[in-house]
Amino acid sequence: MKKTITLSIILSFILLLSASAFAQPQRMMRSPRMREQACTGILRFLKANQQELKIEDSQLAKVQDLVFSSAKKMIQMRDEASLQRLELQKLLQDKENLDYGKIKAALAKTSNIRQELFLERIKLRDQIDKILTPEQKEALKAMSRDRLGKRGQFMRERGFFRRGERLERWRKWREEQGK
Image (cartoon, rainbow, N blue to C red; front, side, top):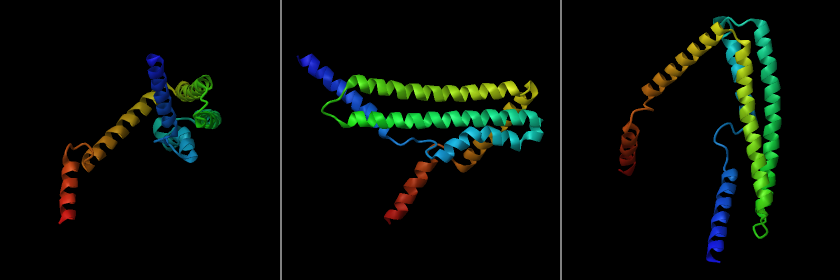
């Protein structure tokens, strides 16, 4: 008897924690506009560096078609995921009559949609990779490395990677405020 009560309390606690995870705002790409920009970011990058990467207009047109068709699918999938999360919240509102089977099914659907979104991003990268020539891929990798190196250098110059320096500046500022 005690084991079943303890087990049911633990299960309820786990379900409440998982429900609160869905209630938290997403950290990255909150607005629909930012999500759409994430899909089209590679297209903008390729257009901006078309001369350096030696990308032909026909290749760019193919990439554009791929990106927009993929973005359309991803928007539909995100809408479906949002509806599924709303359905899950509805199931969790009735705390007296929780149907664990329905909750588990709703969680599984949400998880499957997120997996499909991830796979769609991977497919898009793979399809774009097939369009580009080996020389273009190599040039793109080199540009990415340079860009990341410059970003790291910028962050080091600004003090993002200096350990303890921020803390010291904060303590100094707090002392000045206290005076």
